[in-house]
Image 1 (tube, each protein chain N blue to C red):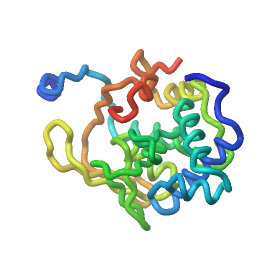
Image 2: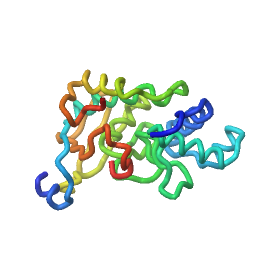
Image 3: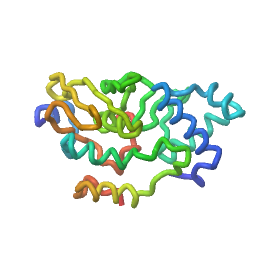
Image 4: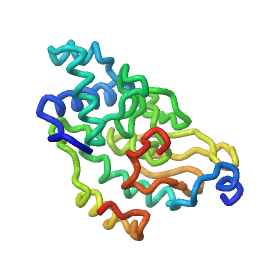
Length: 152
Length: 62
């Protein structure tokens, strides 16, 4: 991590990204962010770069938009979370439970075991954890998660 | 899991059951959507890990 950290404006960019993810399960485009925050696309891109350094937002590999705002993913993943109002894509099994946690709602995930490929489902119903027995295997220690957030 | 590790070449990490993961993610993500969020220190993250019983080198943030 380098630099002075996010500015108030950078945090405002982050807040808008999370607000939209929480409302509609997808990321706002850089153009939409620039319109809402009354600035240029270049400034939004620069802010997202700062937020990446701060381990808050991951841009798409080509830098054209937002990829991840944990637990949310802007692209389809193997962890779709069905909430009462929408389908939210989570980045990993950790984040599949992170979606109901951050939204304060129920959320149910149908996925498959990454080792055996056996279908499995789990989530939160009526505020309670339910689903198949199983364990989540984390390869990357949390302290190293942002060294390669796509792999993590 | 051994077969998967051999097939993929990944190192063995740590396993956590769903109940413990649910206990972790609730404080981990509880306030992250708030506009007032200004990040969490490694010490703050470590306190959450410790509180849900995730101990050992794998879970050390600081």
